[in-house]
Image 1 (spheres, rainbow, N blue to C red):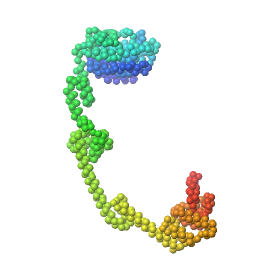
Image 2: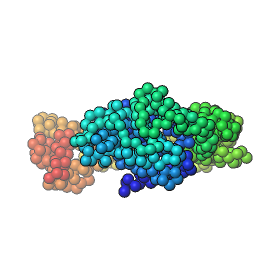
Image 3: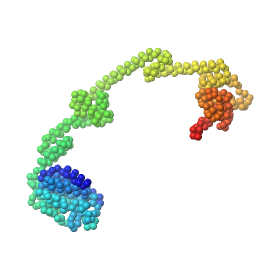
Length: 542
């Protein structure tokens, strides 16, 4: 199936010959199981010369046996369908021989032996027979034969036999690759005779029909007109400067030389070429993209690369200013676009200034309307509307001052209430609510006065130290509540969990201290807090 697919591809690639010439050129230089044949690929350089001489060429490099068979089948089918005046076959690579025949080997050939030789390459007598169908003669050029030595299995040796059985009308020339290339180029010159080419090219030998009189291409043979027309059609199809220059290189005075020069001039003056001539740097392209963006055209990025988004933006800008919508810029258009963008930027700056001034006026007006910071309600109302406003910092400072004043008033009120009650419980309640209050030291001193420690008792002295240590911890009301809650969960009933360490709370604290092997003073210490916290964490994993 793959073989016939390749044949079909070959047939589609060959254009109708119309009694012209057919050429098959294969250069195999890289074999899987044999020595490399250096230079075999040079025969492929003959393709242009053959086409110029009016040949339809099928060529390939490093082909497998299946691929070579498909190319030969395609050439044969074209020759049978349309006919051809002349046929040239050029084969460069390894050859194999037996007493009964010779083969041109595909690059996948290993050591097939005589029994499998037909599966490892093309039989030369088959190639000769196909080529003999040419009306005015055929030539077979075999290159690299002297380098093909060694064995390819039982009954099959490398190289070519001394003599080949060549049919009438077919000439066979063999020799090294460079001489074969030189000989083919020589025979393609109109009026050249094959016998002269073989005699005058050292290293070549011929057999079969080697005409000493009739030139392969007749004198005055003029395939250039057809090649000229084909080259011009190809250049028009590609429609690039390189294509037209290539045509003029081959046909500087050709039938379409003037048209080619006109096409070159058209392309040189194309919008794309004009923009290329500006040689815009990456940063200049970014500047153009920024200008287009400023004008409201989406370039899909400001990266200095003019892709479809930028080209569409350029066309949009050109359309809006009655310019040809090419998608490419001239120097004048670049400058014009920059001017438009600069004016638009200035307009936007003015609009932004006006907007900021309006916002500032509204800000100041609202500040005045809310009392210019005279009361707390006005300050909070201002910050709610203008959290980053002109007076936001001042408003927060004043609110902080008001809050500090109110806190001081509440502190003093709590102290006055404790003084009116003038009891240990009252002062301890004050300390719970205001552990860092303005009168905390006075409350502690008053507690010591109302419940003085027995300075003569060592135990009492220790409790006084424990009380002082607890006071130094600065326990807040919420912290005291948490301690009482933890004591309750541990089974040491502290009474009401209100943050006030009464006698029951002190007993619970002492029991907890005993539980953790601490001195049972009844006063909270840092060690007790640490042990209780560790015990809490362990309970999460139990």
